[in-house]
Picture 1 (cartoon, rainbow, N blue to C red):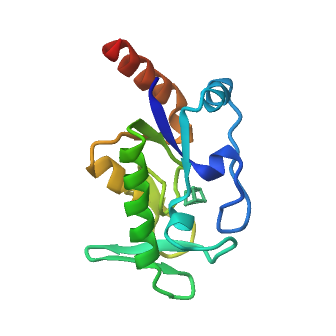
Picture 2: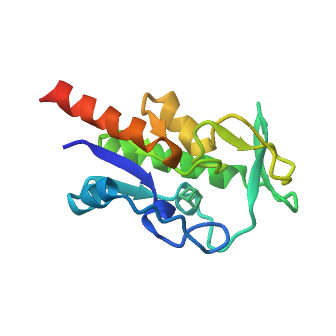
Picture 3: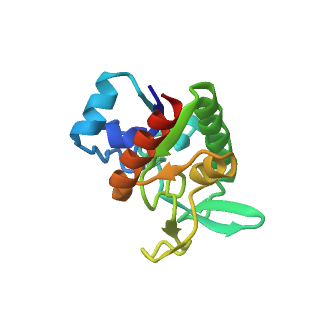
Length: 159
Ligand code: SF4
């Protein structure tokens, strides 16, 4: 059975910057969890940050710079979190990842623009980008049908 990496906040862990979570209730995800196929990770906690913590956004991609609204540089924590996320994904041989949309770590297609104004731009969070660079597809909670189809296809191909 294929394993799936998942943002820990979507399993109900209170790891968000504001101390909350983003629990997603879906029968397929609940079944996968019961089957032990979900591998939870919060890249920001893995990178050494605590909960609650100040919100952070990517300011620049080349060279990479992630700061809090107050301007504190949290790039090292984000990079360590991304590395650990990839390590776990590879160790657990996950087929893909389900990660929280718009997060500066987990977002797969859109992230905030760095002005802390709620504007979104094209781009991926630091950990999601690291996974995708290493060939691990990343889906968001807005792409559950695509995720389910991907897993079904992968299992059919490896049957
Ligand atoms: Fe959730 Fe990812 Fe943010 Fe952690 S870094 S709280 S897993 S969205």
